[in-house]
Length: 333
Image (cartoon, rainbow, N blue to C red; front, side, top):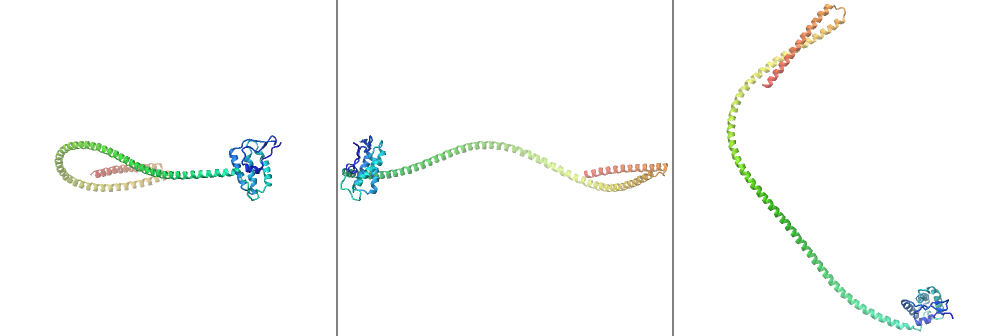
């Protein structure tokens, strides 16, 4: 005998199935695998909503979800469409889903309502307890926050005080170091002062000796000054005589310069004559008409002129040296 799916209307009255409503063995028998407790509870809720009345627009959605929760997850989730089709046929033969509510109330309704009431009361009790606990925790939190602020302020104050004490400690250490340094410096200064006092005393003795020597030297210097004054007076007389000699020497130099100028003029004249004679000799040599005697005579004259020219040069050199010597003596005077 083939397996027949449970009627939807019966299922609404009975409630969710604890075992799978799918078929096995080629549709000959019911599966019988246990459904999850949560799936049974969900199926009960869907059946409760359908039993309270639902429009046909929502029926297919309810039926599909009901099939999902009524078939085992292991083997028969593939039979969802067939189960939905069968249950849809069951709804076609009833006016339950035409907008009127069913007069049949499932047996799980009362149990569900009682459970909901109990859960609601329990939830309200838990909410009150939680609210009271929350208020208590809020007060405790506020107290803790105040204590935390006080502790933080105390910690900040303590930290500031510690920093101040550390700063004072550092300042005291610095002052102590400075005092030690100043003490060492004062000791060194005292030693230096003692050394300087000894040096000053020694310098005082040496200064006294130096004063005596200076007095002696001053006396000698005064005597030397008198001697120098006498020598200066003598030098004045000598300078007067030297000035007179210098004037005479300058006059002699002027005369000598005039003589040198005259000699230079004579030498220049001899030079000019020598040039003329040389030119004449050159002209005469070019002329073959001039006789040998005339040439010798002219050459003799030229030789004499050259000798006189050399003598004049020697005289000029000697006068120049004499002039230089006189100038040197003049500078020395």
